[in-house]
Amino acid sequence: MPAEHRRWSWRATARLGIAIALFVVLGARVGSAAFARGFDLLSVPLVLEAFALTALSTCCAALRWRVVARRLDVPLPAGRAVAAYYRSQLLNSVLPGGVIGDVHRAVVHGRDVDDIGRAARAVFWERAIGQVVQAIVTIAVLTIMPSPGRLLIPVLGAIVGGLLVATWRMRRVRRHGPGSMKHLTDVVGSDVRSLMGRPVLPVLAVTSVGIVVSHVALFVLVAHADDQAAPVHVLVPLAVIALIAAGIPLSVGGWGLREGAAAWAFAAAVGSASTGVAVSVTYGVVSLIAVTPGAALLGIDLLRRRRSELPDQLRSESTAPRGVLSHG
Image 1 (cartoon, helix red, strand yellow):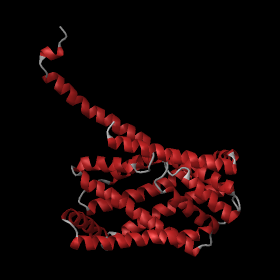
Image 2 (image 1 turned 90 degrees about the horizontal axis):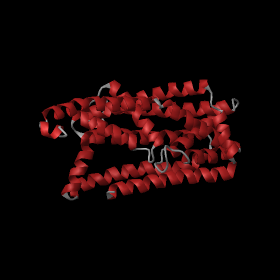
Image 3 (image 1 turned 60 degrees about the vertical axis):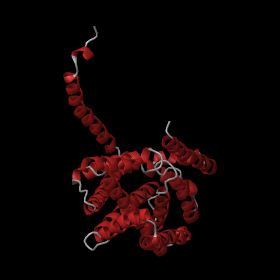
Image 4 (image 1 turned 135 degrees about the horizontal axis):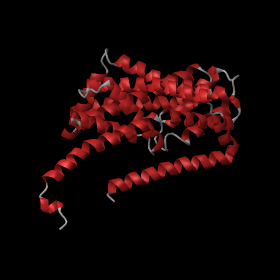
């Protein structure tokens, strides 16, 4: 097994181990009843709401990706972007690390436009912009609405500030660094200038906010399925805390980290860690169900590839020497 594959295997195993360990700790803390309660909250209306909100967030994400890709001169059609994003979300939800789906759509798009490098940069910037906007929205929510999550504001602020400092440092490297680093910073600088322009930046911001709002709305709906009397202004900060934790690439699809953050947040805000675990489990299940169209799309892509490969195989067999094809 190549060294790169071994490293990926170890990382995948470690992330799966982290998720399992967190579930074991949570189970010992709140009991298995909290997880069973999470499945009891499932209902047809809730699943339908999850499908609708996930479709909205997926369309926003696909539009954000298309805008970034167009600015980097690797455009893609709207329908293909939405389909690719559904596939990406499914893979990110079931595979360790939360980025395999993004790698998949970057490679497929890159092959379509014959430029995997630019396609990979488009996916990177699209996801990075989304993470930054999510952090900013989280800071704003935790600042405006009372919640135990205010302790996280300095941490998130430091992350955003660190990105700004890194950008400033890259400008210095561009002027005084070695040639290879200058090339890298030239590429990054060119991409940033293309994406920070007035026609593009508002679209990226609005679509990113739309994605966050869709996810928060689904979390709040799940929480209301457990307690219809719970105030929205209490649930929204708890939702952003759980969702920002789920975005940390240290588990499988955010499982474990999301439940742990929800348990802490709900325990601090409403005095019930088990409620946080139950709501987070339900959210994870309905979110996974809502991206299952990606499985059908993956199957369709596999069939298309096999059909496209079949004529090549038949052509190679028809042109092969008779002696090679005969057995006697």
